[in-house]
Length: 282
Image (cartoon, rainbow, N blue to C red):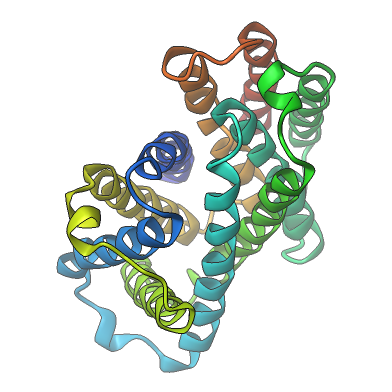
């Protein structure tokens, strides 16, 4: 039972990688705003039946959950705009930079002890990132710097969200966190739609099956992550490394679905990164 959080975090990581592909596909049929709102709304509706203890939450934690929701609200806007323009394999690798941000939060804020294996694992992950940037394909050369900045800012905010998950699950149940987080997130995107006066096509969005797939993957992945965080044995520094397993999915998709170039180099870098993850959890 004590190591079940490792498996649950791995589930989250792999599903997260799959979600990046589904996001890119969903944006072919709907706008960024449409995908964000309906994907969040559908996910919220899906998680309601499993939310049995939401009335018993201590209301003093609701502001903290709202802050988490707001952080993700901004992060998703940035990441969706970035992923629409970036090669999927490159986005998956850039997303790995959150390892650095989350590790720093875990060490300096949560005061988590770091073992020798974790240090070696972190070094491998960083080396994988550095080697990847040494060689670029034609698709990567055409990427605008602003898009890369948006992706990196999203990573910082996601690292903050992961930190808040670890703190909040000490005081609220995974079901409570997921319900109120999704509720606040849905309301935030609804408010955004109203203020921005964004035009949305409800019929088209409901028929966009990629949005439904995205919502289902989101609910399963986040529930796995919240349960893992609630385990007292879990450590944010290790969890952050395990989450990066999703890069294998995005890199594979870059080759098999989007036929991106320079894939052998990316696979070698991903192998170094995954080796670092394995070493860290040993």
